[in-house]
Image (cartoon, rainbow, N blue to C red; front, side, top):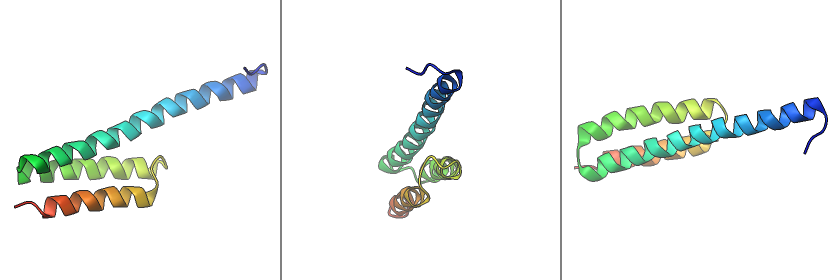
Length: 87
């Protein structure tokens, strides 16, 4: 464990930052699951609405640097493809 005051502070900040980033990553996963559930249910209006919400969440997390830009784009592309494939 750190003995110097500044090292203790940095260790504490790292824990707080990790917890914050984990909650944002979890929010992205939940948003993706919500779109997948709406697509599976076959409700195109609900799926489109959850798709817009999930895109906002993904973009916000990418802007913060928690998720890589390409990963965010890949998630959005796959969700859009699933939504487009609905009947």
